[in-house]
Length: 541
Image 1 (cartoon, rainbow, N blue to C red):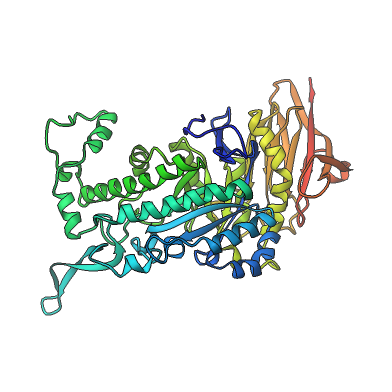
Image 2 (image 1 turned 60 degrees about the vertical axis):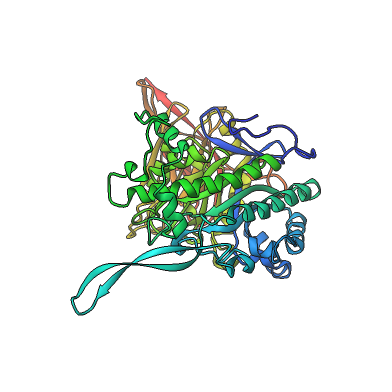
């Protein structure tokens, strides 16, 4: 068993998942597929894309041309159980077969009751027999201010019914768990022959935006009741003086600030609802199962979400989740991701990567040891203008080198350099690191005519050389030996992959002093990505 309690052997057995998580000696995490290390070059489809195999067949070649190896696609409850108790996997099976034919893996996202972000868990993904039967499946109620126009002031609160399904109805949890159980059972069966599905996601960006909690009658009754003993166990584990069974603690006992108790209440019931689904996946098929959380939200966190300090709370109540994926929202993200990695000892999968700043994936793979990055809404990407294919092609070629470095605890550093006259908090003017007994610096080219930002990755190798890849930057080094007076480029060799689809690297061209400014710097091309191997040496006195 691995550290997440998942089976770690076998790839095609009847009860053995084809994908499991692993932990490297440097503390980072990776994904094994068929027993081999795997980096995800991912692409997220719109939530409606996998409702039709015909539609997918028309866009699949463009998806493949992007260079992705893993699709992140949605299966909605309403599409597999349109009639209660009657399941239809016809479209899903055809799509899985299509992905298999194209050599793509699939991370399947379950959209049921909980799909958050700005929607307040708008239950668009539930079947009509759930959505239209409010007696069996009550709706969430939210509070709104009552405004008196004559007095020009707020005079009270009112409650309004929303489209979201309440988690506090008597039947919703069992109904959704039955549907999810049917899906997971089907996945397990399909994977025996198709070997395509590598992970399962439960919901996305779960939480309330406009209210702190559900204000339905059933939710009020729960909020006014003593807190569950599991909550007291959590606070005991944190070192709190609470004593389960000694007192009847109310939810208000755990809120010091306005709305804090209500937010905690929402987080507990969201987390335990997700845990029930994650348990089904973990028990029935053993694949990694996760949900996602925004890491760079500009503004207050969603109420009840796992964002920020609530991650620890969620992890306590969702032990069956393998990890929380980091979802990017518009805005700067590098510092947020670094903080997320530092706070949470778990695998790093990044969702929501924008196509227009894809050069920043090198920071995520090189500095943060991400096991994967997924571009958002890939069917809308214009292949003619997108930089994504070039980046993913290069990442494919470098994957064996990056994974070798992780397995041998060698350093990797990725970067995106700031373009001239452009302010970007996620980019740097240069980056320094220590590798192979040297201070290694990656910076802009000296060529003043090149004003765009460079990007790339540097990988420390066993033989003391550096493998570098990217474009529009130069690499300098300074020996850390106190006896060294000058450090120069000893060898600078262009590399290429032997064969199609990745493989070992072979030497293509050996550069001279004309290409290294007299040995002072190894210069990467300004307009074309390149892979190269660099050796430095130092004069000592």
